[in-house]
Image (cartoon, rainbow, N blue to C red; front, top):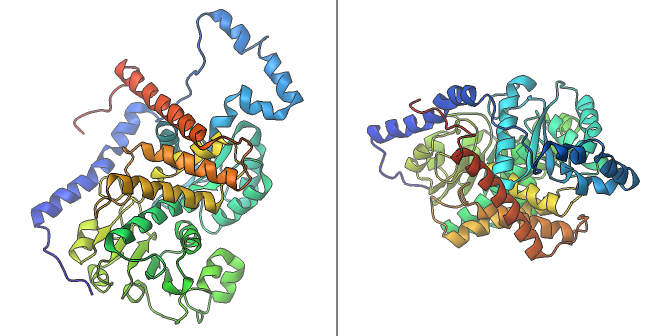
Amino acid sequence: MNEQPEKNSNQDVAKLLEKAKEPVRKGIPWHRHFQGKIEIISKCSISSFNDFAVYYTPGVAQPCLAIKEDISEVNELTNRWNTVAVASNGTRVLGLGNIGPYAGLPVMEGKGLLFKYLGGVDAQPLMIDTEDPEKFIETVKLVEPTFGGINLEDIKVPDCFYILERLRKEMDIPVWHDDQQGTASITLAGTINALKVVGKKMGEATFAINGVGAANIAYLRVLTKYGVPRKNITLVDSKGILHGGREDLESMKEINPWKYDFASTTNPDGLTGGVKEAMKGADVLVAASRPGPGIIKKEWVRDMNDDAIVFPVANPVPEIWPWEAKEAGARIVGTGRSDFPNQINNSIGFPGIFRGTLDVRATTITDEMAIAAADAIAETAVEKGIHEDYIVPTMDDWEVFIKEAEYVGRKAIEQGIARRKLSTSEIRERAREIIEESRNKTKALMEKGLIPPAPMGI
């Protein structure tokens, strides 16, 4: 098993902890300063007030009539083609739990900011004040005329599975749950490259999965499609390891069939116990459970195989601090945070994935498209040179979003679910142009002082 490397000094740990607290300390002052993170701004030129006669009445009547005649024209004559709803009821917000639709709004605004700056996608928060899945589904379906895609966000389990499944079947635009497919894409990419660094094969590695919620269920789906046998996987929920003898297995079939599927097909040896037992001898730990630290113990990491890979991705605080996992012998550690190396966070995925999806007018986002995105993410990092502290690109590596758009768009065309048949170079260059324009607009507004700087000295 892993040998313990040299420990960080108390001074080093204090610095790391202080760094980890900085975003939290700035949270309220920065949000109060800007009073929101996104806004609607004109994209058409306005040289005189006479232009409004074209953009509004009477000129606007002509595009209205054209759309009435051919509904597909709505994506050519309006911004619908590039507009996504970030739909949530705030029942499972990134480590905060069920805080409701009002308290969840800052998260969805943040999502909109990332969509625009990283992917050039116009994303509008859509907070829905209901915990009834049927009402939620009906509300989202009713706003379909406004949006070219739906990004579901922060919805509790198992409602999120049911809502996604229904909306994908019943809507004519791509519907995606970022906490499922988005997290799955980036986690798969991190897994691919981490195993390359340590010299282990995907089909032979053993996995301990702590937390069987939205993120890990989707990760398991793409992981097994990528070639990991289910027999190599052990799952742990709040009651312990999932195995064939669990008393709640039968009821799980009715309440959460998505979880039941993996509960009944993994861990064939019937291992029992908790996270500690699941981690013993494992090559990879993926924990998407509840905020730490202290959820994963250092001694459990020591019991993993040599060259262990540890992904504690709970937000806002990982299940174990990365330096603690390293001290316990983990060779590669990734968290969900941008202030530590190896950010296993869906912000690297969804902007580029939606860029490619929207540009080819795909009708859905399949698991194969999510896997294509994972390949794009992994390949981008490989091109830059992967090592223990760099297994996935950062948000600064903006070319990753272009490559994702290319791979995802191409996969949609291959699967016959794209309404526009663009060439690979057309997808790539279109994505580059749109993303670059979005970044340049923000930069220009900042240089002109129209976007003020963030408050300093906090």
